[in-house]
Each structure stands twice: as C-alpha cells, then as structure tokens.
Image (tube, rainbow, N blue to C red; front, top):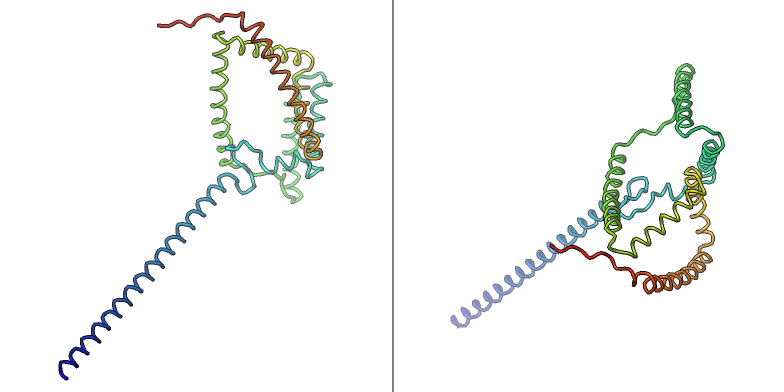
Amino acid sequence: RGETRERGDGTERTRSCCLENLTRARALRLRDSRHTSTHTRTQAKDASTMAGENGASVTNGAGEKTCTGMKVSKEVEELLLWENPVKTGGIFGGATVAYVLFHCSGYSATYIVCNMLLVGVVGTFVWSIIAQLLGKPEFPLPEPKPEAIDEAFACISEHGKTYTNKAIGVFYRIAKGHEPALSIKAGFALYIMAKISAMFALSTLAYIAVCGAFGGPKVYVMYKEDIDMYVNIAKVKVDEVVGQAKEFVNDKVLAKLKPPAKKTE
C-alpha cells in the first residue's frame, strides 16, 4: 500500500508538472503572438506614416503637386477650367488688355512694363499713406514663401538640365550631318517656324498661346467624347500619310544619299 501511494503521488506530480509546462508553453505562445501582432501594427503604422509623408511631398497644403509628374497645381487647374468665372475672366481680360496695349499702342514692351510698374508703385505708396491716416488696413499682399520658391527653382533646374542635355545631344547629331532623316526633319521644322513667325509677331503668338491655355481645357472637358473620336480618326490618317512620306523619302531620297563615313582611329 505504501508503494502504491508513492506511485500515485509520483503520477500526480508528473501530471502537475506536465500541466505547468503546458500552461507555460501556452503563455509563451500567447506572448509571442501578441508581440508579433504589435510588431505588425507598428510596421503598418510606419508604412502609413511614410506613405503620408510621400503623399505630402507630392501635394502640399494648398493641393499643389510637385514637378515629379509635371502636373499643374489645383489652383491653376481651377483657373483654366473656369470654375471661378470672375477670377478667370479677370485674368484673361487683363491678358487681352495687355495684348491690345502691346499690339496697338505703338510703344515698346519695355516702355509699357516700366510705366505699369510705376503706376503700381505709386498706387501702393498712396494706399499705404491713406490707410495710415484713416486707420484702414494696408494693401492686401500675400507673404513670400521662400520654401516654395526654392522648390520651384529646384524643379525648374532639374527639368531644365534634363531638357538642355537632350537639346544639346540633338543639336550635336544635326551638326554632325550623319543622319539625313534627322537633318530633313530639323530643316522642315525650321521652315515651318520661319513661316509662322513671318505671319505673326511674337506678342501675337504669346496671346494665341494664352487663348489656347484658357480655352482649350474647358472646350475639351465639355466635348471630350467627340474630340477624342475625331482626334483618333485624324491620328490614323496622319499615321498613314507619315508612313507613305517615310517610304517615299527612304526610297527616293535617303537611298541616294551617302552620309560621310565616320573616322576610325
């Protein structure tokens, strides 16, 4: 009987030890799972924070997009789409008045600009004096933002460097004269530009560009489906004509031209 009791006590101790070990294992697993879930949540929070920072780098507080995608700001988009007709009409009317002054007044651009700046300087000075005497607020002017200016110049510098390198590379290829097709394209483009510049003055071309900027986006939004349909039809026709022209030039012109051989050292 004593041996049986000892064996029973040993069995109970073994069972209790096994239960303790199982409880510890479960506790460790639960702690590890909690730690893993906490770590996963932390990583997700960090990822969302980084995404938010990247989104903030793409769009600033005013909804302005950086130059990475070369997209205009929200304010410019609203301006060109005539969402505020009074503001857009005022700017477009000012551009029209400026064009009429430049084109019909007979004065030079420098003369008109200097006189307009003179009127602005005198007007703000008089406004400031009257506001101080009458206790009125000063002329409303937005405060300069050096950070925005730095970002704009950095953007312009980066893209300017890229396009300048491309332009220099194309000019070098044209100047070497080893590519007849490129030389013909450049000559044709310069001929068209010369004809257009002979028909219109520089101020007229600038005003046409302004009219296109203020009218083109709005017209496209209003008649998008019809414009896309006709553009696709025109694109197909242009591709056919360009293909035929390329075949003619390659067979009749480029085949008879032999560019100078490149020197080998």
